Each structure stands twice: as structure tokens, then as C-alpha cells.
Amino acid sequence: MANVQWFPGHMKKAERMMQDSLKLVDVVCELVDARIPYASRNPDLDDIIAGRKPRLLILNRADQADPNVTALWKNHYRSQGIPFMECDANSGRGVKNFSQALRSVRDKQGTLRAMVVGVPNVGKSTFINKVSGRKTAAASDRPGVTRGKQWVTVDAQLELLDTPGILWPKFDDPVVGDRLAFTGAVKDDVLDTEDLAAKLLVTLRDEYPDSLRERYKIETDPDLQGWELLEACARKRGFLMARGEVNTERMAAVLLDEFRGGKLGRISLERP
Image (cartoon, rainbow, N blue to C red; front, side, top):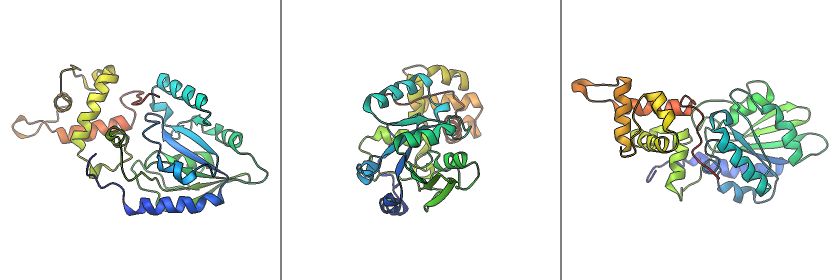
């Protein structure tokens, strides 16, 4: 993740917009990716919110995460006194619990207003569409689709403020950057996708070898390098070019797409 220019100007503008909008809302809802609950929390939000508003943590994409690991995270949040809920915005599972979870954090007479924040591509717009029961927020499986703030009226008692996904200017831990890239929070066109796929394969080999063997029919030898695993997957998929060379670029794109789409099974890349 070194030397990648992935903090475009609109993200800085979005940060300022969020700061200005805090006075308009009663509570902040922070969506994180249940597969990487630590890496997908923007540390800058602590400075922006800084105790000014109560927060609800929403573990989205829980249906793609390892349920045993998610249970560990839930115990962790309970022990820290952090209000949370889990859901899967794509299927809608758990979304119906949102209003109750929100009011357990901050209840008031009249309309409750909540700001929905999170890193790019964490599913904010899809979540808002599911909560409101209609397509109002622009949803996409690539980062950077929501650019301006959008108010969405759920009902007479609840209004949501959709905000653009923002990252932070510098990853102190390169592993955090890799995990965000694995899940699509960083645009692929600023990355070396073959290098990224090789790193993901090593992670999966070490943590979920059965998923790799089942999906790509390869041996998960601990001595193999990431690029060797990538080549092995490409050969099994028949991604060959002229003179028998393997098309690792195509395989990298397929691997990242299938991982992000949950086709490798329920996988979590972080434990509390």
C-alpha cells in the first residue's frame, strides 16, 4: 500500500462536511465490514465526533463473516460498552433491528436524526435503502459513489443522513491498508491487483485453507509463495495465454471479485 495516492480531495471535503453536519443529528451510525471490524473503522472519526454525539456500531456483511469470529467481536464490544448491532444489508437480515438499536443509544421525542458514516464500499447506501424500504441512496459495489450528503426520510420518527465514504490520509499499519484493499474499500485502479491477490492467498492459506482447496482445487503448501499460489489457481482455472504462460492478472481479478462476493465462504480476516 506504500506510495498509493488513494486519499482524493473529495474525502477531505467530506470530512469537513461531516463535522459541519454533526450539529444537525442526534446520533452517529458507523458501518464497518464484519470481516475486518478493526481495519474498517476510520480512526479520524474519533476526532471528528469526539464525544459530541452517541455512536452505534453496525457490523455489516455479517453473512460473509466467520460467525465464530463475529461472536468474539460481539463479546469484545460488550466488554468495552460499545453499542452495536449486526446485519447484512444485501439480504436485509438484521436490518429490522436498526430502529430499536438506534433508540437504545439515543431516544427522544419527535424525529430522530442519524448520520450514517463509514469507509468506502462498506455498504452504507445499500443499508439505507433497506432501512427506508426504497431506493433513494446511490448503491454500488465500488468505492466513491456517494459524493454529497443526502437526507433520507425513513418515517415520521426517523431521518438518516447518508455521507460519502472516507478513508484516512495515512495507514500506520500496512496490514490495515491491505485488508481494506481486499474488501474493495480502496479502488483497484490505484493498486497492483496481482500483488494484492498474492497477499490475500497467503492470508487465506494460513487462516482458511479448506476454502482455497474447495474453490480453486489447489494444494495449500505452507512453503509456497503468494505468487506461486496465484499461478496455481490460474492454471486450475485454465487462464492460459500464448506459449502456455498463465494469466495471473485475470486470476487476481477473479479472486478479489469472488472473495468480495462471499464465494469463498464465510471468512473473517481479523480477531479482537
